[in-house]
Length: 291
Ligand SMILES: [Zn+2]
Ligand SMILES: [Zn+2]
Image (cartoon, rainbow, N blue to C red; front, top):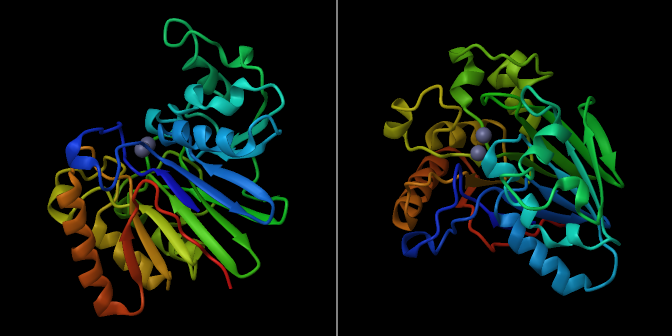
């Protein structure tokens, strides 16, 4: 997997975010003959350029899994160059776009006066499917989803091939899963059954990428905003015997130094509990998961 965007809420270009990167949520996952993209934040633009350089005129067959339709998770789509080539196929999967349907939400961000080209006018073969089930396959890759604790309809995914698995929860507030808030979504796992089900959902994954936007002090001022506290995310990862945790959805107000501080703190917490490795997701970083 490769991180193309790791920031939360809004892109943060500039000299103080050069190390971890300023683009919003987007991860490329390759394996078992599949190219699966997790979220379409502004990092998707860079991935599109790289795919074009690799494939040239050859057709691409891509799957995009959306966690939800907040801006920082969909804004890269109009700038994703592969959709402007007619021989490419992009299958977009996600759950209902908060109150409107998924297709309606994705096309509305490209309507005039927001963007010059409508989603229906782009030449690639794009298929948007609103998911109803919570367990499905993309070729040999098994995908499971469950609701995250975040305003609107937002999910997390677990992708696995054989015994290898990764889980992606870009926007998630663990304390709400503990029963600290009322969840509007009748979700199948986490939102309904709470934190313990989330622990089971991510249990034993090789890589967990999870919203760790705030440190403990900041979090107390942002309870109910739908984002995670690094201390609580480390505790969950330890409990679920995750092998490697990537802090994700970095706060737009956090510079590189602050994020490095948060990783150091997270590592000190992890060291008390076991074998867990902790990193902060960094734009351009590649993670290999193999036997
Ligand atoms: Zn977000
Ligand atoms: Zn969000």
